[in-house]
Image 1 (cartoon, helix red, strand yellow):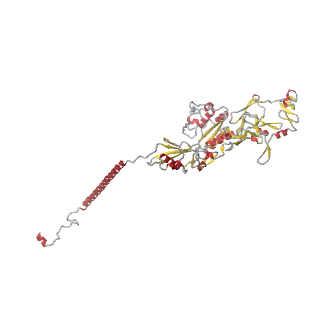
Image 2 (spheres, helix red, strand yellow):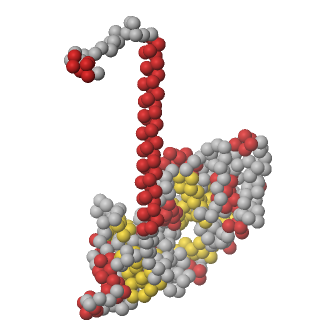
Image 3 (cartoon, one colour):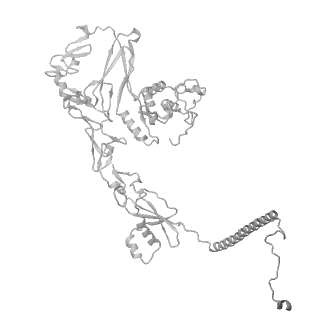
Length: 568
């Protein structure tokens, strides 16, 4: 499915019914075996095109219902033929005994559930948006398909066929379907054919098919209607053979059927009893219903013949399969299976139930009755304390994952324990005696670019004196022995370029000083120019001179000492 190419169209409905029809009819290309149970899963989240939609693309030719897959497995008539109709698909699915499971999202379930009513042997169920439940959905529908058997026929008007059966030892009733079956269950149907009216002469001889839905099996019933029969009206002659040997000498053979004398019963009058009813009662096991009333089931549970008050169980085609018990109620083949193995190969089928071997449990003995397989290799809590053990498998909490639920954001690791051993083995010190005592394992190997390969392994790292990061992975063997794989290529930091850093700092300081000087010069120049422009504007507006300048003061001498003047 991951390799399948998906194309996109200009409308929401999809062309899945084209593919569905091709899967049904392309027997050799798909690889259907002749007697295989054909189950097709149709998964979608949208509607599908039906017959008549092709006209929007100019395609008006009806679908011929034949295989048109090219050498690459692609449908070659997509733009030449219209989409198939529901009736067309239903007829082909019926003819090829195909079971169709519509796995669709919730918003489309109602539509496809209506579709399934028109298709014999089909069903519809809800598919999650992320398809997470696809396996559960298919398993559920497969169990419904395989646990149910329904008979249908092709009887024409004028011929009425009625079915009688006792499903799983229930009361005999008129029914053409049994549910709740298991592998190996035997269901006997009694079919009654009734001619409701005499057909025209051309239809007095015809073949009727009786078939199970979804299985490539059929019973051909050749019916020859004799509207006038005088056999039973004859009491003498070839129609009656008195004390016939075919009737064990205890009855007359009338029209090919034994009519037993008083005190004799059986199909061939082989039994001698006081009353024929007693024989049937001796072959009918008693069961208790929900209302605690004792009821009688069908003879020998439908799996044997009542011969003179005793059940003779049917023989199976497989000599290793047996039916036994007083009322043929037990067998050794109808127990639950896993991978086509009876009782998963871990038990014995006894009277329809699995008797499991030691340390196994479950309906099919599929679960280990021990938590040992849920304990991490090397020891620890069950499922690392982050899940619960079911059937010998860990089911993790939402925040954990891994075979033993060992991976989570808050899970403790054994990195510190192994880091000490790796460090002391790689860089021996005076504490070598302590190292040998705590790190008795010697399986420390070096590899190029180590990666986690098993679920029991975890990745760790340490730093040496030079600051180099050394990666290593610890794990455990099947015997619980510790193993360590060290990456021989440590990740070391590059040395600091001291000279480059010094020159860089000096250049940065000089550049910063020059930039600051330029900024100071620019600011002062702008300020001076601004002041000078303002001075010019003020001078122009005032037009002052020496006569009208209020700030002008004529020069005068303030010294009055005459001696000073004389000396001058």
